[in-house]
Amino acid sequence: METEKQRTQILNDNLWKILIDFSWPAVIAMFLLGANNVLDGIFVGRFAEEGSLAGISIALPPVIAFTGFGLLIGTGAGSLLSIAIGAEDTDIRRRLLGNVNALVLIASAAVMLVGFRFSQPLLFAMGGRGKELMLGDVYYRTLLWGALPWIYTVALNTLIRAEGKMKTASVIMAIGLAVNGLSNYVLMVLLNQGIKGAAIGTNIGMIVQSLICMLYVSRSPLVRQVVNSTDNGAFVSSLQQACAIRLDKDIVRTIIQMGLSAFIMQIMMVLQSMLVLNVITRYGTAHDIAFYGVVTRLFSFVIQPLAGFMIAMPPIIGINFGAAQSERVIAAFKCFLTASFILVLPFWIFALIMPEAAAGVMMNRALITSENSIQIRIFMALLPVMPLTFLTLSFFPAINKGLSSSIIALMQQVVLYVPVMLLLPRFTGVRGVYYGTLFIELVTAIPILILIKREFRLLRTGVTRWVKAE
Picture 1: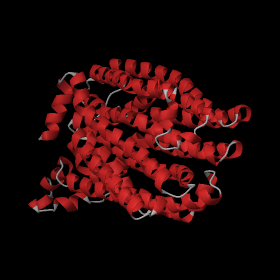
Picture 2 (picture 1 turned 90 degrees about the vertical axis):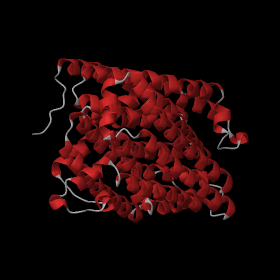
Picture 3 (picture 1 turned 45 degrees about the horizontal axis):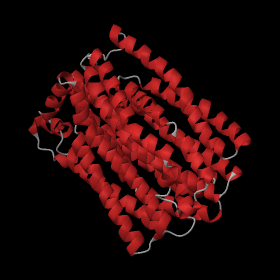
Picture 4 (picture 1 turned 120 degrees about the vertical axis):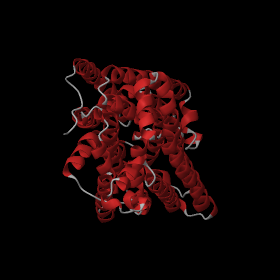
């Protein structure tokens, strides 16, 4: 089976070769995802009515919840799958997909119910007022109709990567993003649908991705195992098995534990964005809100390739961890950390040297002030720290220690973020938002280094290990 070949490769090949083989498709896919976010900003900034850029900025935080639930399910299930492959645990692999499908349905229903019921209050809480609130509400409510394919796509794409199918997952994502871009052009430029057209285009791209994911998993080892193990030799449709729904307490509990840190990070991003946008509303103007949206989209574009390493690493870590190869687990993490730093370095230098050119992609350069140039430099200065944070949050769930990542995420996003963002802007105005973000990342790096060093020691002594259920 191809899955077993992947397992053998990850356990035996040179780690730098594996890193390149597994990472470049994910890096390219995440680069395209980041480019797509910038592309959305370009379309909205240039082809939608005035105020639309601020509208999508205040709508973005609630939309992050879609990704959050998808990552909760996908990261948890993917980490569990990687460990099960390394430990040759066929029972977990047989039961996993049905539980993923059930969790996707539950999460999608919750997001849509809350979203439609509290759309305007949510956006008001994000700092939306007047025309920006109205446009953001149109954008958000339109995207809500795509919550199911959105969450399903994020979860399944992550699960496909956990099988070691990085190229397949990346191709699926690239197809969906191409459809999204084409749809945006048709709806916004040719049909003049404005901000609503941008949301519809995104939904169309997600629907296409979700259908392709469904077709792929119907032919994957996860489904073939179920079909081959069916009692009485009865023939069961692969597509029906791909859509199977089941809830096993042990599987659901493990998925949630392993994926919780990714979910916390996304939800905390929502809360942090709510706090920031309200701070900017208090101390700044609509221009400051729009510019903050530009900066965060650019930052997302820069770190998306880094996220490619973040999603490529867990299968390698998990399979080696499941097979009790502790030294290869440690060496793999160090390889990914080094490669990630090298990746962000040129983006970091460019953003610091030419901030106006970067922001000018989505905003008229005549509107970019000298203060905006300082703000973007401060925000982008934190890039060299991001590889350590990202990979650590991905590392712990892959060795069945999702709680450690959750603690780091909570410390960073709650214990530090809230007081810093409430205090600094009082003295420095809007610029305090940018100073605060940099300060938080630098301070968080210290306990992360301590935890990583401790975990390496526990892996080497055998205290941290995977115990296969009997």
